[in-house]
Amino acid sequence: MGESFAFQSDFISLFFAYALIVFVILILYDFALLLVSTEISLRLSRIAVRLITKQGSGRYRRGMVVHVVRLKYGFDKMMYQIRLHWVGYGGWDSSPVYTHMVKRPIRNIIFGLVLYLFRPFSLLCLSGIALMAIIQTESQRFLYADLSQLYSAIQGIDYWNVAARISSIVPAIFLVGIFYLISTRGTIRRAIENLNLKSTEDIARKHRELSKSIGNAIYPIANNLQYVVDCQHLVVDAWMVHMFPENRHMIEHSVSAIDYDHYCFMELIELLRIHEAFESLSGYPDHHLRNVFSTYKYEILHLVSRLDHYTIDRLNKIFFSKDSIIELLQDTRSGAGLLSQEDFRREQLDRQHLVAEETVKALELLCAFVRYHDTVSRLMRIDSDRFGRALRIAIQQSSA
View 1 (cartoon, rainbow, N blue to C red):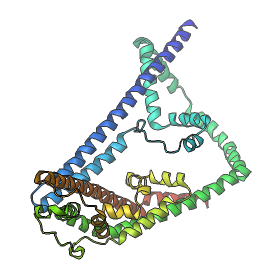
View 2 (tube, rainbow, N blue to C red):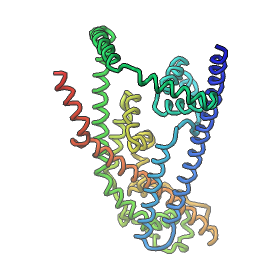
View 3 (tube, rainbow, N blue to C red):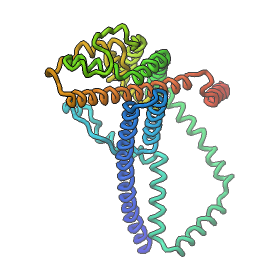
View 4 (cartoon, one colour):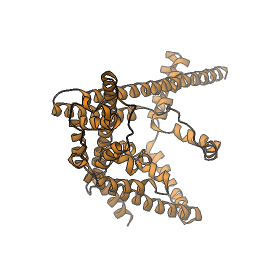
């Protein structure tokens, strides 16, 4: 009795000690991945900016910039999948009253933690911790003795008798299920399930519409950004002429007479349809179900999590549409008179760097558009879920 009590106390103390160590290690692991992913993403963005501003072959620069942007997207996706998401950056709380009002009750938080323990990853960690605690608690000889006794006990089990007893319990479970289905609670839960199914269909339909709008806009957006990468000096020089008209003679390219019709920037009327699809999806009343649907694929979550930021004006500015370029140049105020050649060159480099940064952001958003369109189109195909469809048909036929 004393040995058994000593074993239990040693096991419990070692279990919690190892659990604390594993918990700290996992937090450090997630925090390290957060720092690494942030730093590498920033470096890849800077590399893309330098490639845009670098002098050289336009085709080579375009290809390298696109490859870097795609590499950054793939890296962000990989880091999202291998992280635990226990650690994150804090944000500014714009409405403390609302934040405290919508906080989950303590009992819901405790219940959520209990459910989290039954996830496969949590069960694997707990099993490993328990195994380490047992190994440290028991001597090797006693452990082998326990294993041999366990093996003998397993061999002595009458599995047919166990199966017969389980089969006798099945009718009782079946009756309990029937009573639950005909009860008021079961009726309410079925009604809620049907409502959620219809809401999920509505969200899927909205994603299909958004994917169709994005698919129609990908090609013109790509052509417009190609023009921006190749002719970014037009934007910079025209910007500088409007900012410092007295330094017009220092511009290498002739932009003294600004004729907006000569610019090859595109109108990008497809952005209006994308914005309307964004509003339809972001304005869906069931935010929880919309967010759950978005977590199904990283490509969907990456785009949907930023829906509120993509107004029509913002989309036009991001993708350098013709209207946004004209608005930028017309709204630019003149600077402080004549500048020296050194100061003017410094201002010109700053504008060039700013245009390059905005171009990289536009390419990153275009990459997110392409991945989202490919993912949703693949999910919405009629042959996308053959195994699941065959399984559902078999279940319906067996129940009929």
